[in-house]
Length: 464
Image (cartoon, rainbow, N blue to C red):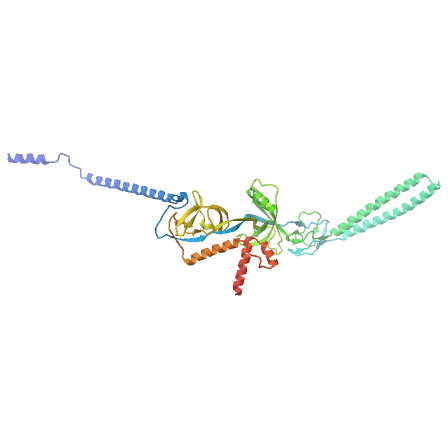
């Protein structure tokens, strides 16, 4: 009985669930681990996407959408600063131009014959009327002699006919000859007079042909390569000619002006002559300076531009026909506040600058951009002369954040450079220059004027 009770108790203590298979526990463990890893990857991706989205929104968060979010405190960001200066920038129109000779002349023979002499050197500068080549003139001299002989014969016949007419008129007065004979003789006189006039024209034509056998320069300029060698037969009216002469002093530059600037060009031209500078390919050095001539009379519908022409004295031969140059037409000057190009930034709501106050705190301020060159921007609104702006390191600046200016030496150089640039944009004092030099400087473009005064300063420094 006791053994039966023990077996009954042990049976009651056994679990009610069926036994678990041997391979089920490891599979469930791996499934749970994969699920957790998947959740972690999803969480990391979601967090990274949120961080990138917040980072992209950061520049537009502060100052009404101008720059980075508002910040304060901290040690400050190291930046470069510049002082806004009152000055002027030239109003210019830049365009690609082509050097074009005002006159191009081809030496085409006006009579046919053998080219006996070529008296010019290829590439030579020739004067108008200078003898350049000769054609065999002997056939034309013979034609001239023949025309003169014909004229002499007809003149002799005319003299005889006039004497006979005089005798007939005397006999008619004595009623010794019929009037018909007198009238016939008078008609003969008139006929011979016409023949003499025709002979005179033939003589002049033959003289022209003799003169055409000597080829002279129709214009002054540079002569090109010779197309025909001596000893060859040339014909009158040949298309190629012997050579080509191009006028190079003065010379023109043809360029295009956008149709939006045509009204400004016309208005500026009414106020006076407009200077034009021909610059090299890099727009760094002026090749020559001249005066604006005129605009074309129609807008090119394909390009939306109007062709324009400027004339240059080109006494030094710096401009060569067919050469490509950068033409810079100056329409006047605009006045405003000048800051470095790097100081003006662009945000979702327009242009702005970081203004540094007395406590070295940067604040964003909306500005209106005007003209600009490679170094400076003219601001028409939003900034006053004398205010400090961030010129370097603006990407790290926040609105309302502290800034730390660069070392004193670098900052002094920055401010000195800005002051020098503003001084160069102002009209220099020319009263101490000699009269001839003053007139020369007044005709220079702003770029040429700055280079001229920089050279004079360097020369004075070297002399000291």
